[in-house]
Figure 1: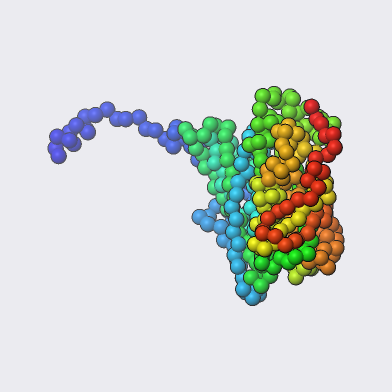
Figure 2 (figure 1 turned 45 degrees about the vertical axis):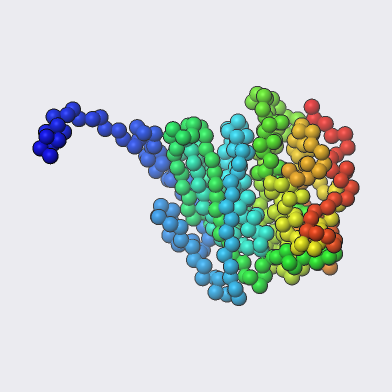
Length: 374
């Protein structure tokens, strides 16, 4: 023991390595938290308890006592490679809206009202201004959905991620009374399919969209206005944020709840591989192609990728971001309520006997005749 102690005493002191020198700037993290406070506060509901900065977000669920059988419904998702388009554009606010939309639209399919949201931002090098831009978008999405942003995490990953790289994930919790929960088991033959218009590609299929639209293109080309995109550039059309359907659909459920049997959020896998998730095993959804409008960016991407109709319908939302399956006698009233709330609503088909699949009529009407955008 004596010999070891003497050796330690005679050794030259080693140079201190701080957390900041290792690549994590806690002071910048504190500045980022300060920069986002107002955006976070703008989302608060009466049920929020406390403020950001604690070890956990607090939210009262006292209102659940008025429900017959309250169920908490959770959802988590990310934005995927759409973030790479945001990096090219140098615009990071709209992907925050996307993050919220992908989570809250999912739990809406159960009839749940989103209550609160949490985000996780992983970044190579923390920059408070950039994080504030992302969180401002997240707060915007939360306001659109009526849910509170009650917590989150900003994590620097030096040595793991490049300084300008970042990734997003989100988590939401909502509530629904089991007696009013939407369920594929409620779907009946003859029910009507009401499609709600999408704003664009939303947040799915971007690995393909980037491959055919951005790879090998310089920034100036991506920022060039195009007539076939309504005067928009490719970059901005690709960054159009995902539409959040929460408030209109919840209002329709309140006013016509017994007339709405099920809801499908059309995400990755397109109409083909999402609408079937809202069907029982003995019924099919017969979708009449050509009965809805399509944002120009969708045929633009499909044309660039040379997709067939069948492949397109199982890749992108093709202009339909959400589908409500409703009683035929309630269809007009439900559509009127949704339209009054600002939604574009299309009667896109009906429920027929089958095996829990999506089938199409008039499939060759999917793409606009002669569409081209070279």
